[in-house]
Length: 168
Image (cartoon, rainbow, N blue to C red; front, side, top):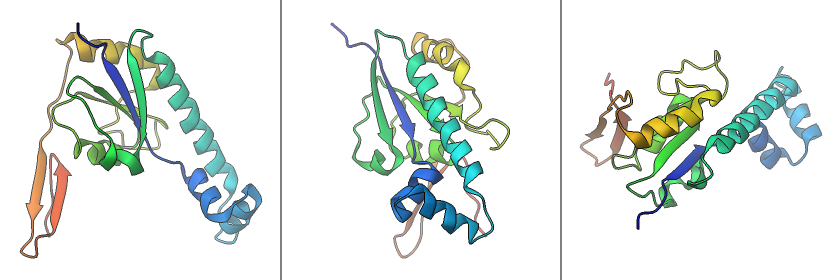
């Protein structure tokens, strides 16, 4: 008996959530941003958009599948299984960060704010999630294999990159 596939939704805290953690209340966060010439309205709009995207992606996971969520801060402690389908909901950098912890699992990148991000690694919209999950497990779908690159400096510092690394 084999287990049903597991969709692992990877996301990160929004700027609004980080502001609330740091400043405690919406009003304090708004004051902090206004003292720097910014409005909290745009931050809240992006927060709401991101949360809505997460709800849509979670709803697209087939009912017969197992599902799990992991925040970026917890990736180093999360155990990915070989048969997982990883759904990264966020920006390109989150895909690259998640890739450090994977060993061949398929990754689907979902853009929470189309048009705002370059979308090189998160090319897909929330509405495409169900079809992408089916294609990821059925095989035969269009995939793009990327390579992890590791640079090690003389002082043993390590730098991991997805597909490319620029040295200056």
